[in-house]
Each structure stands twice: as C-alpha cells, then as structure tokens.
Image 1 (cartoon, rainbow, N blue to C red):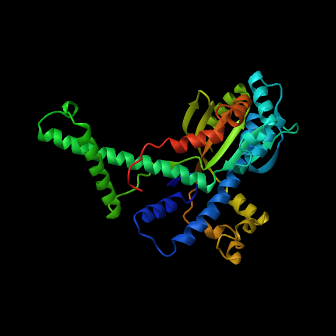
Image 2 (image 1 turned 30 degrees about the vertical axis):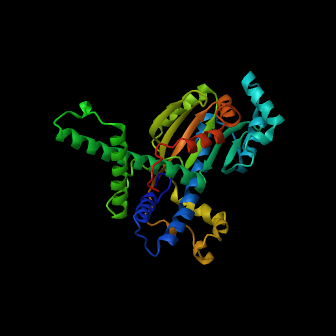
Image 3 (image 1 turned 180 degrees about the horizontal axis):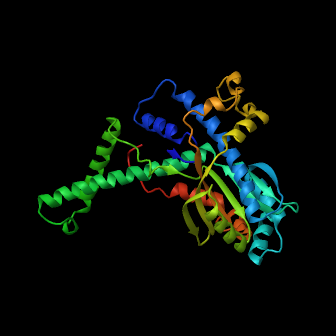
Length: 341
C-alpha cells in the first residue's frame, strides 16, 4: 500500500509490490522495521505539533494532552466534557453511563486527547494501528483486483462484439457466458501475478489516514479554521469531503511539512528508543538517534483532518454512527469475493 502518512512511503510501497510478486530481498525485513520505527515516531510528533497549531487557531487557549490506549478513555472524556448539550447528546451520554460495556470500551487506540482547563474535549489525534491498516489495505487491494478483472472481462466482451460486428452496448450476453468470461478474466489476472507481469496502481492503493486528527469546536469556529487553513502556506488541502446522514463531519486530507530538527531532538530527549527495544533492532543502533534512519525520507506527509462539532463527536462515538460498528460494516462490505487470494 501507499501510506502517505509515512515519510518513506515510496520505499515501503516498492517493498510491498516486490513481495506480492514473490521478489523478496534479504534485507527487506530489517528495512521495514526501520521504516515503521522511524516513520511512526515522525508521524506521532507531527500530529502533536499540528494539533497544537490548529487548536491555537480554533480555540486560542491553553490545553493539556493525555495519551490514551483504549476507546473507553476517549468516551469517558467525552462524557466528562459534556456541557449543555441537546436532548440527543444527553440521551447518548446517559446510555453510555448506564451500560458502558456495550460501547467497545476495550477497543485499542494509539492516540491522545486534548482538553482545556475545564476538561472540555478540544481535539483527538491518533496513529492507525497496524491491524486497521492491514484491513484497509486488504479492501483497497481487493477493489483494485476487482477492477482489473472487470476490465479484462470487458475487453473479452469487446472482442466478441467486434467479431460479430456489433456495438458493445448492443451485444447480448447470456448470464452463463458472462460468468465464464469473468472466471477466465480472473485466471488471466492471477497469471499476471504469477508471472511477475503486473504493477501495483499507486493511485488506487493510497491510504491517507494512517495519521488522523479531529478538531472539536462550534460550527462558526470550524468554518473560521477552514479559512485560516486555506491561507496557511505550510498546510495544503488535498481533498475535502462532507459526511452527512448518521455520521456527520468534514474530512480534509492535508499535506504538511515535518520539522526534522525538532523531531530528532525529541527522539533523544524523550529516550524514544526505549519503546522500540523489542522490535529486533540493536539498542546501540537505536540510541544513535533518528538521523541514520532518515535517508530517502520525504519532507512532507499527508493525514486526515476531521472537523466536528461536539454533538457530532458524541454521535460518532456513542450513537448511530458508532465508530466500531462502522468498521464492522466496512469489513462486511466487500466488493470483490472472487478466487484470487
């Protein structure tokens, strides 16, 4: 996959492509380990710095951070943060406090919450866990393969149409013939993988939200924040999507630079190597600092920025758009269910 939140995204994509085609190299394992250590730390540090900058724009007040490991910590913070919410918000918070065990409290999360002096929730940021990345990558790859098979099946139909000298749209194909051609198309695509005669489509396999940040504020403050983002020379908005229905929020894909000097300094000051001692890299190498890991690193990275009101945040974590249930629905909503593994 092309993980645009990573600064070694091209290297990781190249390794993934070779592995899918059975072309492993002896140092791939250690290279991936170094990428995950380096890029994970850089992403976490960049999220923390960006959260501080955007909270200054949106709220202009001091805040404190609290790292969280479980969704129950986030949902407790939401309840603690509740002010004079609407009827729906009060109802959801009451339901959670009455039956907290129904709300996936033990679901893991690698992130932090930002709250003000009155414990009002201002922001949340997180780095997507490896399992969730793998699940999303699996969906993207399946969709990409499905399109390859569809395109090949369509080519076969076009060949039949030309043979009979009729336009494709006028070609009548029995269902059994369509099923047969789809199976033949699957075999053709599978053969291309087997023969190392295929290239991964980077555009189709991009994942932008390995790093994610959510700002919680009033609609007016969120609108003003978007205006300030458009004027900020260090933040480039790549894409924008408004969600409506059971889940409501504005999602922006943004590209930002990362501060190499600050990140490398923090790596040493925080003794960050301690958290990576069981990753298979020598302790002496980790203690040398982050700089030796940065060869080929990109100067910018991308992430998802979600703008949400408090009421919509409550709905997304406690209501009809409960995050874990949306994830379960995504797992079940598979486009491709064919025979290519």
